[in-house]
Structures are given as structure tokens and as C-alpha cells.
Image (cartoon, rainbow, N blue to C red):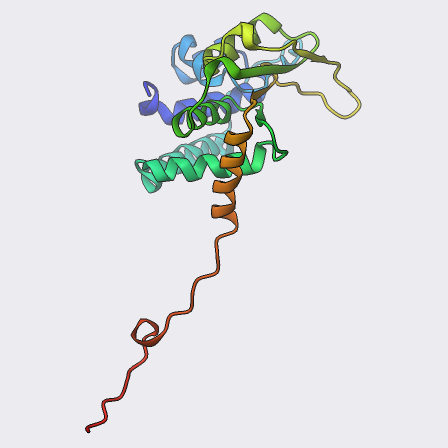
Length: 232
């Protein structure tokens, strides 16, 4: 990734964006290009906060900077601890992702999420480990009214590589402000693949991970016992 050398700035940008900072303000505060800020924060839920008359915008305080630095350090530590993923690692990781967010009812593979990283990983995993007929992939977008449907569709079709013609009619939701004030600007995407065999294959692999057979008790030398030698 092109921005891996600026992990600290990336995490600080995401934190500021989540707190309502504009891209111009983040760019000026961190000394990075606005295009970089846009790339780093495009999936961060954002609502413009009304500016107070005469108020001067303040940068992150000491605790906020410390938080951003800690996040950056632990992100790098996480990459070092995980290292390169093997094919088996990717298979198991995808299974656990599906176990948490995928449909379990027989007949179709379905995965829904608002996080582009998880949707991208699911699509990669499905195509990598199963024989997928691309024409049978479908996408459906759940997006609140008032948000940019065209921009969201362009984003998800590019991310998933599923053509727009294979997306079903989007669901436009009306936000209930009594309990939710934030909205996901790109909505929630459901990727579905109608194939019973593929779904059953995933369920079988999932069972192997989540319900492994009990180990067979070792006997003799395998159990670490010592057989006494008795002279004849």
C-alpha cells in the first residue's frame, strides 16, 4: 500500500475525520495532501459540525496525539505479529469472517457489512476458494435517504468488481433520529451468491473449524508411558 509509510498520519486523519474535521483542516493540521486524507478517510462516518462564531479551531491535544501515536504503534505491531498469510490462513480467516457476518440458511451465500475492508476480503475469499460463476453474484445496497446513491453505487461496484447491472434495487432507509444520529455515508452492502453447493461447502468447512472432532486419546509410547523391560 502506498500509505504504509505514514501510518501515524493516517490514523490521526481518521480520528479527526470521525470528530467532524473537514478534509482541508486535516490536511493543514497533519501537513499531508488533501488527496491522501480523502483516501484514508473515505469509509469514516462523517457529519459536519456547526462552527461556533468567533471560535478558533484547535488541533489535537496531548491525550489525542498520544492516542493517535499508540494506535499507529499497535497497527505496526499487529502487522509484524501476523506477517504474511498462507493459503490456509486466508481460508480460515474467511471462514471465521463468514461465521460472524454471513447467512447460515441453506441455499445461498450472503454477506452484509458496512466496512469496505471486510466486504473486499469476503469477495476475494469467495472467488479464491470456490468456483464462482460471476454472472450469479448479486449486490444490494442499504442506504439512508439524503445520501448520495450514485457515489455509493460507484464505490461498491468498483470495490466488489460486481457490475452495476447485477445490483438489485437499493433500499433507501429513513433514519430514526430518536436513537441514531450517525449514518454510514456509503451504506451497508449485501453480497449474495445463490448456490446451494457452495453454501454447504462453506458450512462444512466452518464446522471443521468451530466444531473440531475430539482428539483420540494417545496410547502406549504416544501417551508418554514407559513399558518396563522384564528379562525372560
